Image (cartoon, rainbow, N blue to C red):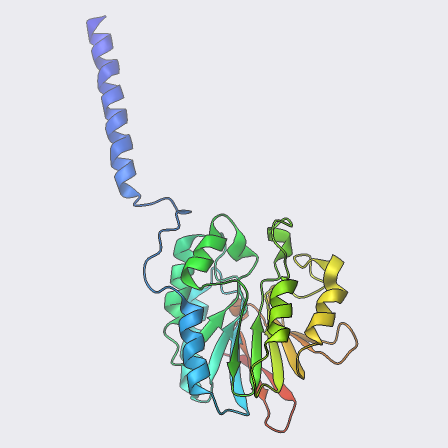
Length: 273
């Protein structure tokens, strides 16, 4: 009997030792928002864009989107965009992460940091999973923000209403009202950047028409850029002349280039790499 208890005690000690060793293998829980590396990415890059493009009346902007699980493709896209030499800045249409893991945001940020031009990124629906909202805010900043490049105001929005369960206003109309009331001097045109567009299952379609009413209050809207559905599409969903341009997911090895023309209007090109 003594030998039996001895063997049981030995196995129990080995079990505890295994647990201790296993715990040492994991430095942190995957949903811990313990951020390493650069923070306030959007804020810092917006400052670079505004300073570098203060006098611009035309520009070329590249857009990537839905880069989750596709870091190799994103790496190649960054290399291709850098090789062009004609891009003023880059927009990311969201879904940087797949599961809202802090490491996923860090990996995406570190890859985008290899760009030779500044970039901004909006939050996607996958970025809202788990503690993703906190990780996004910790690394990139506010989920709604705006900036001015030359004579164009860029309004960047969180439109992932489904992920917020009506706990916060999404889209945030108070944010839009403040933007409308404080459009900077010299702004003549507007571009919107979001992840999910009106009509998608993620958008709050109860307020879809109200959202478009706010959009049309901004000066000379060029286009609304978005991602989410993983394919290229340009449409005029409200029949009011405001074009919505969808960026393919990066796994399709495509990005968009928007050219905003000095004389008015824009071109949208799908570029393979």
